[in-house]
Figure 1 (tube, rainbow, N blue to C red):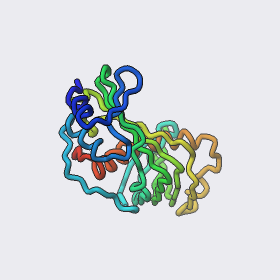
Figure 2: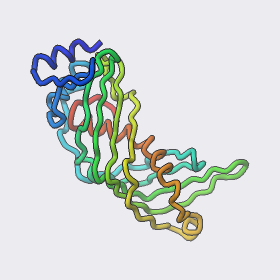
Figure 3: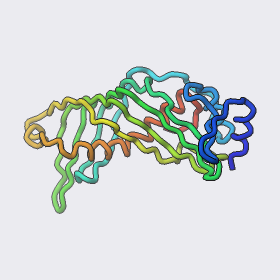
Figure 4: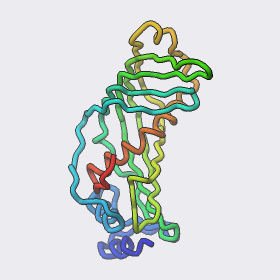
Length: 218
């Protein structure tokens, strides 16, 4: 149960109640209040960096795209504007024993030298290489933290909502890749949803652990 969160909320006097059992203890801009509520109901630590760089790079990030029978490896993934994300929702569902937390990331910019691995039945995998950079108007991350007196961001599912398709540029790195890549973008929305199924947990944890409360995982 989340009695500790409710007591804390009442103590600071900023609770907002919506429908029955829904409690919003903090303004979305009040990181300290959100951190205090998370810390009161979890083992997250108050020791945080307090910032993210405007640009940083990860190595060898793999994700899967089952709809396309493909795997992808971002050999160098440069992330820009992660530091511009903001909390856009935070509430406790008291009867449901759940906390809901959302983060909006405007103009998220991802750039990578990427390897595409195409899987085919009874055949050896084919590999293609290209450079890609895309800017997403808005990525919305949402997690439901169950058992709200034992919140654990590290094991929680994070939904990544690609609210609009990115503006992007692709540069094939060799002739076989140039011949393979399709110009048909009719299922780009499917690809982006599959991509952010893998990207969303990292983006959420990195932001929360850096700005709000450190759960000790990426």
